Length: 326
Image (tube, rainbow, N blue to C red; front, side, top):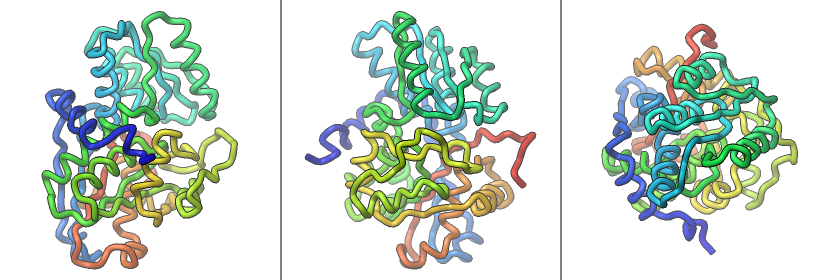
């Protein structure tokens, strides 16, 4: 059975119809100096300029609006988050007059925690353990009537919502040869894979990860090889600290993404982030810096011939300006 039997292009298109009047069609930027230096035409999709400052708004909004369409009695929203998903849910909850509880690991930057509080959400801190985060959310959903748990990534409605950025990108640049996608739990990667591969079967989707995730080893083996630990990767990219992909996102990425993965060090992520600030004139997080770093990588020479068109997803722009890494 194909992974796309669970969520497909039509689901993504339906999601786009559902959310398009609320989201921003984020712009695509080019930089001639960057193209000349690295030998391709790069198209930077600035999800850093999305509502709430990150791509997470697309998937969270689609999941909540679909639940409302289905007649669910929703009094509140709950999830765990390293920042951007929590901010998106808090924004949605405030818009619809709901309560919101976000469980954040203590490793979440204080600036992102405050953004969530400022939107009226209740914040609960826990140690950076994904199992514990999920258990707290499940307890809240059970104890508080009408609360809806919205996964950060491992939900087909969330995946479909994230895939809408690929619809936009291929409308904005219809002759793309490859897309570089930063990945944590895999919701964005899965959504982009589904939409982009359905619209352009020969397009290459390359995952970008921090050191320590070892996704390429799993993709080449065709199975999950991650340790049982539910802890976090030690990376400057605070939005990419999850070890494994979700159980719903993993089969999609395995089936549709390339087996070659761009593994980015902290130093490379910082250089990518700096380039975003200094040359693209865009505020980008270190997670988005990883995809810029992948575009700079010599590994691209062996995977995408020079002269081709490459999309680069800039996933978020919620930056802690009191603690810049450069």
